[in-house]
Length: 293
Image (tube, rainbow, N blue to C red):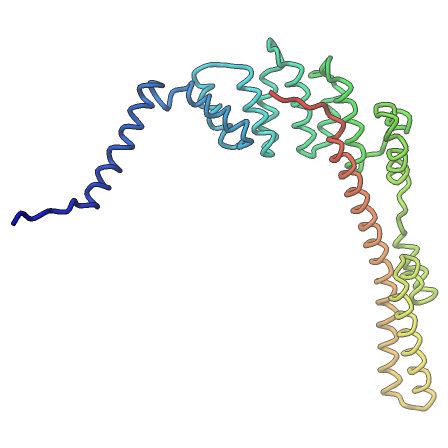
């Protein structure tokens, strides 16, 4: 009787796993010569760039630029750094395209944007006002960005007319509102709050909008003072001194708390203003033109 032998499935699978990758690699080498060639790395970098995988795209572009200088690739490398928030490296690469490049104007604009988004607004204004790297094509956009920067830090604003003339009429009223808020912030004085609470406990907190806390401070201070006086009059010395200490504690705490309340109020006003201004400009892409290479 002839015995039939069953094929070893595991052995077949192992052979296939070895043969298929070798065949695929051979096809790639036949087609492209070298899958790690500079040209292939450029193709892969462009693919990653279009897919918005900027971190890996930057690595591929850097490898390609070791073999050949290409302004478009340099621009894409710089923009990849820009997109992932590495603004210092982005600015350095954009700066390399300032002269003898067809992308000079776009590189100058993106250089200023890179400095701007480092949040070093004072440096940005210094560079913008020196005009050493000015762009004839995007000069107005850079100037507009300069005036936006005044809203984002503590520097005094220029005159209203100078600021507003760089922006379209459709946003003038909103910018005037921002300008007035920054120029004349509705802050509360910690000194005034402390003096008011010195005269009338709780008045300083009411001044800063904390009405409930102000009334509580008034009641606590008044009640403990009343209890101290009545106990002294009734010749209860221990309780009199006890309530006197509590009254002094509530009174001093109310003065300190009122000054602190004014500072918290001012910080909250500033935080809300900064958030609103930043959101306004972000929604409009800081009024910047789209540059895509």
